[in-house]
Image 1: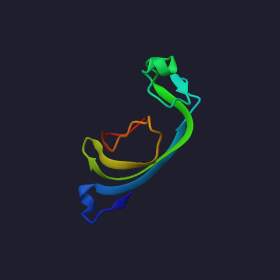
Image 2: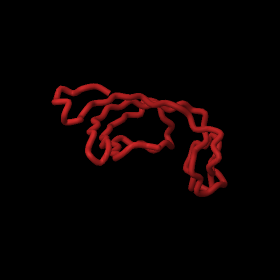
Image 3: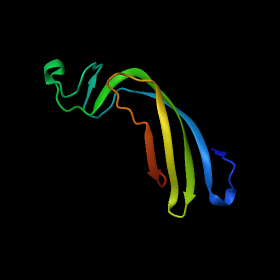
Image 4: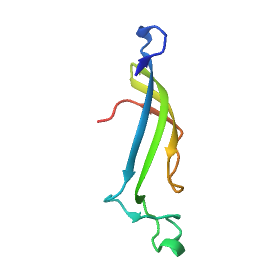
Length: 101
């Protein structure tokens, strides 16, 4: 987090981040090393899986703004995937309220 040049009393700051990891060995309904669509039963023999189980590395970079509001922190962030698999779903913009427990 960093100041963005407005009064500190407003409670607004900037943020930059990177995120990376893999999805493998999950307990969720998944398919290992899948290169197609979960719902393509003709290709995979499995319908409606939740996770593509893969050791492939994923990575993204992003930036955002955080406001420490009276209701808790409000965050607006944008990210760009720099390493992804063709079946991964992209989420470019994220808005969140509050903290995680």
